[in-house]
Length: 417
Ligand SMILES: [Zn+2]
Image (cartoon, rainbow, N blue to C red; front, side, top):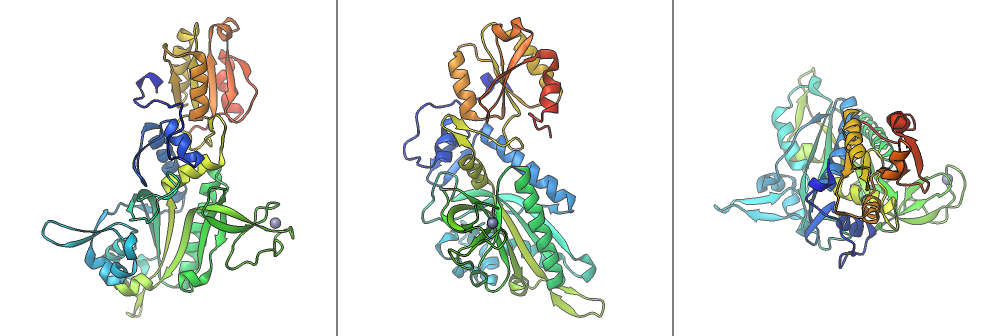
């Protein structure tokens, strides 16, 4: 994509009221637009990051046969009344009315709706197990939205739901999902630790939270800085030594980027989701739910990976693979290189703007944070070369034009989907 075609612009000044670094950088670099506290638009660069995260998640989910669907944001109140959450969810549940006076809820989560679908469809034991997933909008009337994209009133979530015939089946689906989540976070260079949450909070059933250590987090975990072990502060005593490596643990602030809950039969009983076994006996299904907050994950990636000049995106979620900068005297060669790279499936953000100084282009590239910067100028062209710099490294290298693509691919400088 040519940067001259992008309708957003970068900003030099730090936006008022943005205290978190991810909030500042995402606003300044033009990834998001803020309408009000906790309500944002993802602009083209931010939307590309979101799409890349979705692709990474979907690729792992496809490997284990998870089916994708999409549920509505408007929910009839009856569904929430059936599970008792119309009242129990408190003020976070955003209630509204249709013009004819029907009570409605905006999707705070989707356990009620997926349960309604499953209750209608499920009949026999041999239809189990299955896991379904969606990427969809959630709306919550948060008391205090915070930290830019860290806690929103409207956000996108990946939420998957597992259905099994018994507890053993649920254990197996649950373990499978924990494993898949570990792979997903690893692929995106997000150092999320699976932390067992306290049983009391979840009414006895197992739950895991995926936590990323960050000073901007609002949760705390017990953390071992030597081996990366993490545990919930309520079930692990402060000062205890690490069970993995015997190092001293410490309390660290962290951001919850994902969770996995064993719901058991809570919703299947309330919504009457039953299957018939081979003897004709009826049983309630065992459910689990698994979620990742998408915007929060974007913000977390920035919180843990930036410097004083801007964002440093992990390769698999960066809005583009390469930021190509054309400087004076390099225009023609840059145009050709732009086409050659795109032909190779490398996604290029091409700063072709002629009314911008070299300094402004470098500053933009650092702020936007694409993993690889390639500069074409009169000086590099004299040597049949381009200047290559990784966003997270200091040094630049001159690479011969005809060796460039091989160099990028063999050194894993670009991630091609
Ligand atoms: Zn340890």
